[in-house]
Amino acid sequence: MTLPHCNGSSVLVNGVTDAILYLPNQHLYVGLFFIAFFCLAIVPQCLLFYTCLEKQNLSRSCYKLMLLTSVNDIVNLTNCMLAAGVFAAFGIQHCRYGIWIVWYGQFVMFFWYSYCITNLVLAFNRLLEFVSCDLCKKLFSGDRAWFWIFPIVLYSTCLCVFSPDPFYIFDPNAAVWYFFWLGNDSTNYFHVYNNLLKLFFMVSCYGFMLIFLRKQLQGLNTHVVELEKKVIFIPLFGL
Image (cartoon, rainbow, N blue to C red; front, top):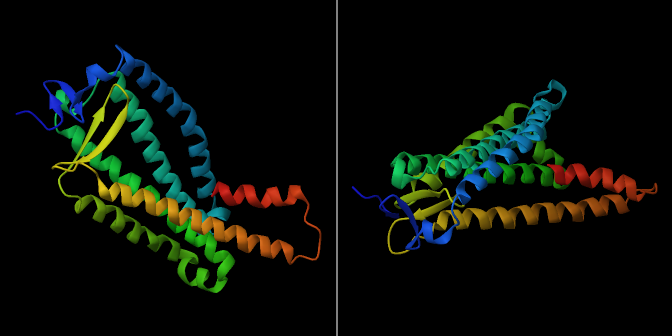
């Protein structure tokens, strides 16, 4: 049985065979690059994860949310760098190795959705610190921050479960996932919606934060030098 987006053992993307699009052995070089990049990028992610686990930090709601973000970061980095690098280097794709690649694509997509919504929750938490500390405490103080795991999982699960005929394929030559829907229109509208939502909400939250922060700085009686502003801004965007 021939799987969708296959021409024999070659991947078809928009009706074009991968052998036509890419250079010989390109998949090996791309795969090795991805694996090498993973080895470098995973180190700061693990350091951030360890920092969030420290007792004095984990008592604060923002660090609980940053821990969730860090977990998603590590999983996504593993999916999109390490696993993608291995898949690319060895030419692993669904036309040769079977439907489990498509199922693994669902796992990749789930954690991308989870990463996006977790970042939005964190941005919302940071904004509330400026807008209403009382409301922020009601929603996030103590163990209440952990309860945000449920809407995060629910959001990610719903986008995966209610996707009509998802068929997620991997092109090893470019080390790229294609999150297609089967049918006349292969556009994954949930993926598009999710990315646009994240972009709009993140820009809005941090934009309003800058406005509120600027007002607070203008209201200070003491002079705030440029270096002090950087000390404030850098951790803010580091979240």
